[in-house]
Image 1 (cartoon, rainbow, N blue to C red):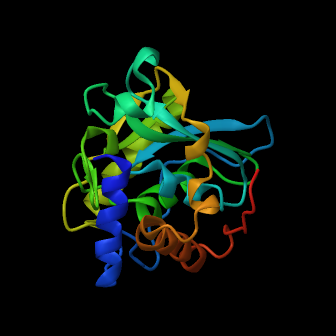
Image 2: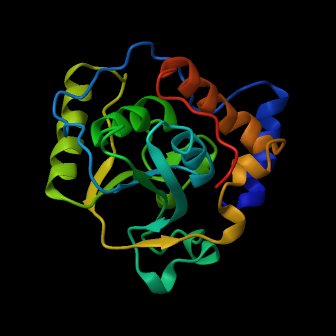
Length: 222
């Protein structure tokens, strides 16, 4: 759907006080397979979980995350523009590149937040009012270790029946990440009164703060 349709739908949802996915699931399972915390250079993770506005709004408030960028992954560089991606023909998913300090937070801990707060991993090719493959749930791994941790955690969550439905998150190698347009960067921060942000993204931030108080940090821009 085009962005203006999102806003119209979100405004309608707001009128009946219905929020997008942001469920307080209490204590969410810690990954059994994970990398150890260790000092070293910053590492990168790429996640897709519906509209990248909200996914970025969550991860930029996580302790140990040094930088986030919204963009596109899954398709070709020649089709990595918002106007093309919204046609749902490019193979791209709205994604967020997360640069993090592995001495402070692990890849598994990022996955825990991704699955519990950032989106609903059981919705196929959609998130709330946003429908299409560009809004699919996906993990684009950069190393075999990331692939192993992601696949193991999905299996762990499914085995524990954390969700009522099976997780449909795609786990695929990152072939390229393409930065999104400037007006999409930090969109939730810059447009706090946008109806879509109020309905779909602010609850995610609140859930992050409530469920992971030790990992939550305030964010004022980068």
